[in-house]
Amino acid sequence: MAETVSVPDSPRSEPLRARALAAYGLLALPLATAALPIYVHLPNLYGGVLGMNLALLGAVLLAARLADACIDPLLGALNDRMQKPRLLIALGMLLMTAGVAMAFNPPQQRELLGVWLAAALVPIYLGYSMASISYMAWGALLGDTPHQRTRVTAFREGLGLAGVVLASVLPGLLGAEIDQGLARFSLLLAALAVVCSAVTLLGAPRPPAGARQPFALRALFEPFANPRFTPLFAVFILNGIASALPATLVLFFVNDVLQLPRDGGVFLAVYFLAGAASLPLWVACARRFGKPRAWLAAMLGAVLAFAGALFLGPGDLAGFMAVCVLSGLALGADLALPPAMLADAIHEADDAPRAGAYFGLWNFATKLNLALAAGLALPLLQWFDYVPGDAGSVQPLQFAYCLLPCLFKLAAAALLWGRLQPRNRRGTSP
Image (cartoon, rainbow, N blue to C red; front, top):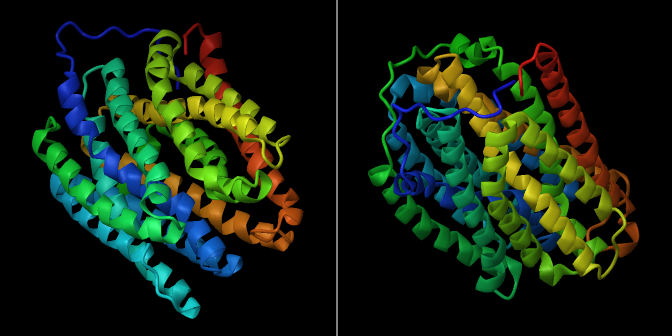
């Protein structure tokens, strides 16, 4: 996982222009706009507003997300077999937007909520995975140098963060009640997906054509033969669990610990705006100090932010705003640097035709993290007698939101540092 401190662009490589990068990155806008409500608003909607049993909600989310995670390597292999990313992206976006509309327009009968949610999550997760895996594999093939590949991911993640900011504020603006706002949001998302998909599919640079790969089970695991992929994958999993826990619990924390339910959208917007604003900084730090060291610094900054949240209580708006800014700055590194490091690993192994297999496993790890966060944290909170809306039962929520992410971040940082040290002793700069 070591890399040189500065890798100049080859004089023969033509840098990608900002217009081309923006056309490619625009598809990240609707993908991220859809993802945040599913992972943040949906648990609160079904568990806090509609009154679905938390243990049942956690079980449905865990089962759906585990099933979703398991198909991602297959979808990655399918992308490599077909070599038709635009077709897979278009089909995936259609499925995803239809599922979001279903999820945020639930039936009135409470006894049907579990079945309805499970049925809605199938097209959401299948469509999102199909589109995002092909989309990220496409991006990994753009750019001839490590710095250019960092710019590709930074443009994509920056526009993705813009979509997350939209998703943070739109449900509150579109309806006085969150369920009404989410229903209207699902319709707006469909229109946004059509426009952004058209720009990317028609205007973005096309990746170089690769040889079709055989569709075989062994192909799903071939990325692990790349010595740079396996340690990066392990760090990504640990760091991803640390990020998934607060994403699942943040609105519960805002509502019951801070008792500021009307400010949830503002907190989310500040968090993601800070992440977007930090992207140029992390691109510069990655070029100057190397991607691993820049990512390590971001992890330690996030630990300080979440540890500080443990001392907050009712009405601490300014304090939690500071937590959102600091953790948001670290978010920029989490989004831009790991995919760029993965793209570097793919190019160094000359494995571009199998990029879909790499990102299938990458998405598998992301979904597994989110599944564990929802499927374990929510039932665990109920086990320790946390009840949404009961301010007297929030201590388990405080520990789960503030301290558990720190433990996983520190484990990820230790593993990342451990991978840096041996190379440094041999004189190679990380």
